[in-house]
Image (cartoon, rainbow, N blue to C red):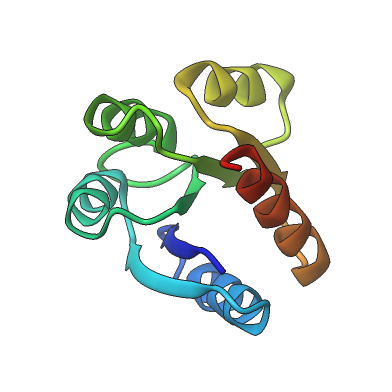
Length: 122
């Protein structure tokens, strides 16, 4: 079981991910709707894994990843986005994301990626 933070500006996406991940036995410790809020919540809650949307108001997910990793270089962040361009995926990985999921997300894919990221920490 992992302690997970979900970051997405769309409440419906956060609700869907929460349903999938709690059904898989994980705990959602917090949620955020933009990059600035994500940084604050990460520092407060220290989740094991973060799911992070790329396109959000105020601060992009990529910028939030960089800031979170400044606070905790061992943070495990999974980017989730409808954006499929190779350069965007590359930017997310270069920023420090450990995995990338293309929307729409289904439960099987979400659980597979969470398990892969958890395996990185062992």
